[in-house]
Length: 288
Length: 120
Image (cartoon, rainbow over all chains, first blue to last red; front, side, top):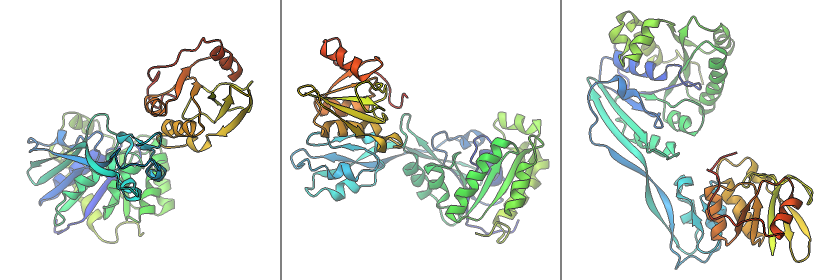
């Protein structure tokens, strides 16, 4: 494959369990040059289970949360009124801070007229790296009990070397963590399964990538189950189908052993090489 | 003293809402005059997070000294305590019944949250 790419390709889905991680890992493995794989599913990262080698030292990631100086606070309540996340309650002087609800925007410190708020670091998780052949994995892992994925996803993305091809393994769904992942992607692959649930969540994912203006195409995984409605939807909406991976018990077995399809079932290498070529070819994806 | 009851109704015969942060509204009752008013909590019904905290701010702003509701989670509990508001949990059906229990001294002031956050 003669592609010198430094693009970032997000693998998203809407529905969980459709094969995002499978597609992300196998795409990374068939690329015959150094490639970065960013595991942005920080609530449940699992790309490392399919790679060899151990993690290097981990780096803690935090977000700035407010700390109020009672000597300077006059109890005006501006900070509380500003906070859309209700992380500061203007009850008494000084107000109460609920750090676990804080998104770290820093607005409270800016609106405080008395300079009573300073920002302190609150740890939300870690970033780790692992190298297996040409694949450099960068993984974010949220601390247990923390529900603040986007800042950690941004920290994972900040580790990216912009001169290399980068594959972003997105979280499921279409909420903030997915948007945080997609926002820095040049292109997106939406992995779906041909079932009513797959179609339902695919339509949400399509709306999301369209709103973000990212060129994208669809991969149908486990083709042979379900029905034809995903095909019909893509045809009607002018969405290119970039690859079709059949329902194959051997694929499930390979995945359950923590192996990669392109290594254990070489007959599928072509599917992933074609997919990579399509996603990296300008004009192959739905125009924005 | 002023007491806040959680409710979706308009008067003392209305049901007591077991939820605090995401109750449709509050009935603010003045024990000295027997008068009451209804306060809306609509903005919190669909809040992504912090509904209990915001509701506690409302109760504090109303000048209430007590809250009578079904359940109260840990963040709302902490906020209400900071505001010096006593919390009484009860599972009686109506505001009138809860008021009667309170005035008869049969309700105990809570010293901890009685449910996890997001219980409802």
